[in-house]
Length: 324
Ligand code: ACO
Image (cartoon, rainbow, N blue to C red):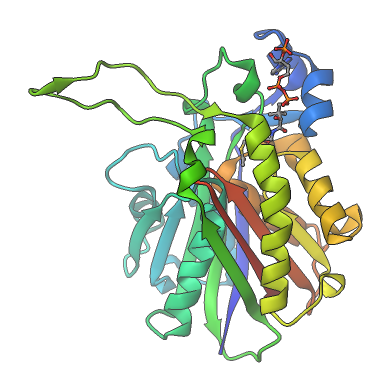
């Protein structure tokens, strides 16, 4: 028994905002943003919702998998930016797609969300509870960023990526070959965002709107240490070596973090495709959007070994090795 990704999809909003566009509304520059992050542009939701982007990505993944929405048993939405707190994103996607036979729920593991969702469906599918699952990383982070804070708002974008994951009879060299995940709540406040304050007849903490708050240097240190270690563990769990991995698809927070991870793993940057140049950091959507773009570009061949890795708020991290 193996558990395999059989379809991928992605969607981004229509509006493309370049670094030059941002320099017209903020005290920033293309030179500052690009040299520190690798980001040139990002897409920002104006007309689109998180659920619409998620459903568009999910529909594309279903078409590639040649499955109908009714064939899906389980939908997991990974997001920190649902349109509504209730109902959750996965239930909204279920409604839009008409996936009437699915159980649907959300998780929040921030930028690691897609990896955590993959780990959950791996367990469900391997145990025989379900046959076909849909996992979606979708964000409209533009609603959580303070657009007067040049230190954070330039980093993020909006969008969604999805994958159809199925239980398969294929042998041990296909599908999910190894996974690790971890969390360190003790360091959680280096990257945080509050919720609506408590406000009831017995207490009043005001109506302030909370925004993303980040200690960039601490996040950088966490990422360059934890990500290569998690990847090495997942590769070992898959009984492979990093030299045998064809592609490393990492969370697209920052080009310098990816370069540092490649260096620590002793692998060339050609094995690390990136899209943050055009997409920015889309938290839980980054990894599945990159996977879909690389998949549709024809860069993945049958039999390739691929690493997916996410890291972010929580702190959380996850890595998976796939045999394609
Ligand atoms: N444009 C121009 N100047 C800016 C901008 C901007 N957009 N943002 C900050 N600055 C200024 C600051 O005000 C500061 O000025 P000062 O020295 O006069 O006080 C100066 O640039 C340096 O600011 P730092 O915050 O120290 O900048 P740093 O060099 O650390 O770079 C960055 C910030 C790119 C975020 C870096 O810390 C980093 O790469 N961190 C990794 C974390 C990351 O990528 N997070 C993404 C989200 S988290 C995730 O997805 C896991």
